Length: 388
Image (cartoon, rainbow, N blue to C red; front, side, top):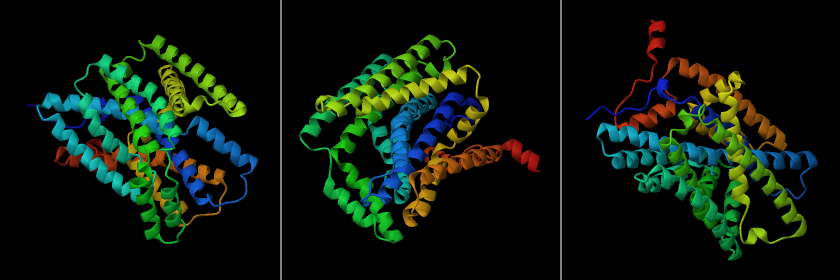
């Protein structure tokens, strides 16, 4: 039996952290936009043209693209982790159950600050992902793509039965949210996450999409895709072109559906196909640009924040809780988004400073220690030497 431990910083794949960093940027922008919607939900006036433009643009480019990309990267990391654990001779199932349990603890703490938390879903669906671990690469791809193609049919079917939404639970959430006490804000966040989000549009449809992304991510690891991006330029360019074309087609199709009142979405809902096609187009574009050797400073910034995704994500939500949920400033949408952008920029510099001194982000280190049941060195050796 060999010793099991997390992969070192030198073993990390740069493009994976870069994609995590990009996804984290998407998440902070859209989460802050969501909180703006919460704070202005009772407004009786129509949003001005600038606000509408910003909302529509952000939704098109970033909306749900962050968590779907993170889901693919989660599946990738899942496969990496269990492969390493299997080599050590430990029970991969026991280890991963323990790891997901601790992730749920982090998720619960994060939910106190933001009711739209996604970590709960990773912890839950990560357990289901275990059932697919012994599938080969081909079947992982087939099952993942099949789930993503079939889910829009199910979404439309449940929509025709009017089973996707829960307006009563939404009203309870806003009743709690509108009260001006920290305790009520916490109750509202917990209610949203563990009650309102049990509606079928979330508990079934979103989780199926998430599972499909998990399986594709695991298959990408098994196929060594991210280790052979220079070799797979043809596949990369083809995927980029197909996803870009599909994104454009679906976008204009949605415009026609809205303009002429077609009932296409009643039979095959294009919401997630559009999200996934834009997410894939964006991600493959980033990979393509990265392998070309351009924009190195930007990729370095994305990479350093991506190494501390968990720490940065929860920090973003704590700041939003204090600044936006508790104080509820009477700001326009662009100030919310600008704040998110500034926070992300600050996190780039903080992450860079932190990783010069330490091996992991603080919460990443804590999660590893809890998962493995042992304390790993947090302080960077070279930094300790320089300090002495």
